Length: 437
Image 1 (tube, helix red, strand yellow):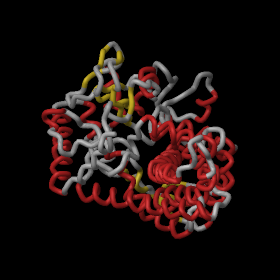
Image 2 (cartoon, helix red, strand yellow; image 1 turned 90 degrees about the horizontal axis):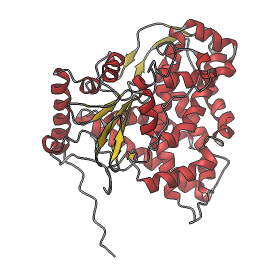
Image 3 (tube, rainbow, N blue to C red; image 1 turned 180 degrees about the horizontal axis):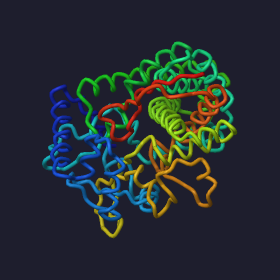
Image 4 (tube, helix red, strand yellow; image 1 turned 90 degrees about the vertical axis):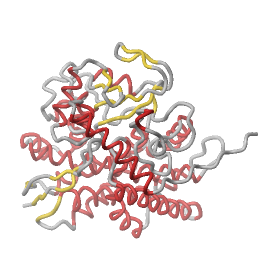
């Protein structure tokens, strides 16, 4: 039996800082030279126009950064569902990171920021095991069982809203944190801690392709560690004192080889970090879109049961993850190009979901769109971490939007929206002043 190799030492501040600045420099230089994908990674505001530029270069083209990029709607759906593309480099072991590599030699501008674990890049076997674990409890057919718990938690948050409040810090994030804690069965102290930890964890999805500042990267990894400690403590408590919550239900799932509390911890961390950021962003984007399109807000107020429709159209119109990073696992033909194994491919999800070849009037926000025959989108599709949390995210977002529609029909905007800097992947909303009549 081979001797297991020890994990590499965590990068020093000097190593990590130099790596982040180097990748940032790549984005700046090639963006300045006109490469639309590099400009996206620089966080330019006109992201949709940049997506159109990418689509204008054909189904698939190679960015100056060495990454193959597509904004084609049909190709996007195929790539995200193709087993020959995945989140990891083929045959690689351990966390995916390139801090000590020479970007000038490798041209690897993926897996930019090490998170200290494989949370966003699970191996195929780990992903399949987590999918099998989550399916009976928080899967597409089972997640609705927790809807009532989520809605009760959201209503308690709305009970405490003042007449004037912020969309993200007072509504979206507390509502998602409360529904998450209620469904998973986290204690009140953990829920309070999450309100402080989630903003620090927020840049995790962006950091896969866009280098944050060194202090942000360090704060993020520390917050991720604290989230894992909270979930580990909750799981340990549920092992000895199971209750009627999702963590207890996950611990009861037997995958044939026994029950592994470690998998339940990973599922809880994934739901808390990836799921919460995705849900908060989707809720905020949905509220902004509805208030921007008054006729659609009126439709939802007249029928709050259409909250799920509003969630789906938001996922298409303003997806919470706009760039999806993939690695070819073998030789594969894509868009007329033959790519060898270990090539980096990025799908511009927001642009692909406004492809006029697939969507009528793609720039309009319309709740009736999901009633169209064949309507679909790829916002949470694929074979990665987003697929694992997608049912939970949809359920939480639907619960929040339904409650907001019922409780705050006179909602209005009182200022300008602010989005997080260096957030080209999520384009995360940071703030929007609102008022309720």
